[in-house]
Image 1 (cartoon, one colour):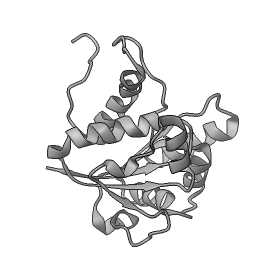
Image 2 (cartoon, rainbow, N blue to C red):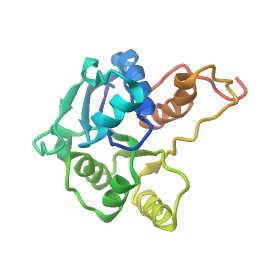
Image 3 (cartoon, rainbow, N blue to C red):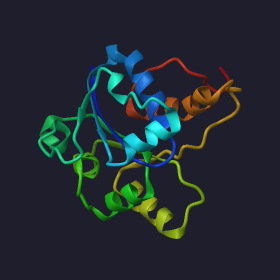
Image 4 (spheres, rainbow, N blue to C red):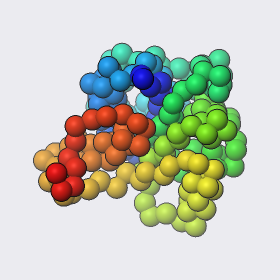
Length: 186
């Protein structure tokens, strides 16, 4: 079965995580029916600042406007299997936690939760304050998955992209995709 996945990219620092995610999804195309992308208003600026050229449109996935509530993943009837928000700003997480669907990213998250589908948030901020932790708790209690951008080192990553991949590989596992990656004790 091929998966339909919606990707939200916010303006939180950590654009490399989104880039590695999209790069890996390109290579996993045989497991995917559809990938839709939506960017927050400042995500392109952060992408450009952190990664240079800003060529997010080079990927073979459809990019939806953040106010496009006619996008398929704005409705549960489209049956998207997973929504991944990477990186996820604390503001976006707070709006999701409060049930505020004021753009396509938060609407897609709301739909995933109400349809009992996978919602995976990749916060990059640190440290967490009590409000952040309560928002994470509320989202987890509602069925979402919080997968912090906390890379692992036991695979001995050689560069920044490999380091980011230690998080993204876990995200892709959580979404239900099968990939070859470092596995503990294998």
